[in-house]
Length: 123
Figure 1 (tube, helix red, strand yellow):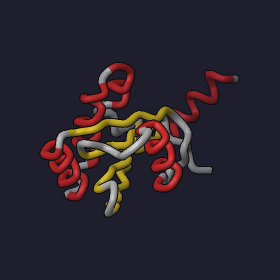
Figure 2 (figure 1 turned 60 degrees about the vertical axis):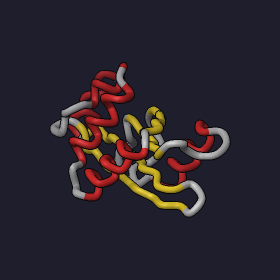
Figure 3 (figure 1 turned 90 degrees about the horizontal axis):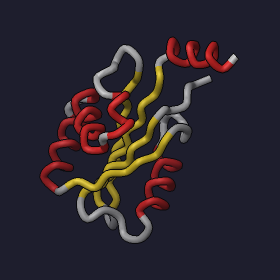
Figure 4 (figure 1 turned 135 degrees about the horizontal axis):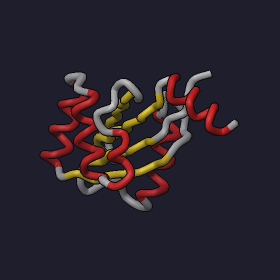
């Protein structure tokens, strides 16, 4: 069984989607996820230059650096996921829509040893 993400973040290029951004982020996650829809869901709207740099970083396979940049913008509890490749897998999915433009989905999935430790804590 594939582990569920601990955190999902949908990243938009300014001005973001038309309408309810919460609903759009949730629907985007349902459509584009590769690791399930569990865990927290956040979203971020970046200026065009910042988004384009992020897109280029993902395109050049800088998964950890781009994830760290997004988590830095979100702050708070999301910092627990920063720079921990031994504990989490950082996955990106990009999409380009004629109406909405480019959108990115970051999924942060715990590695098996963290899941095993969590199961022990729960029992």
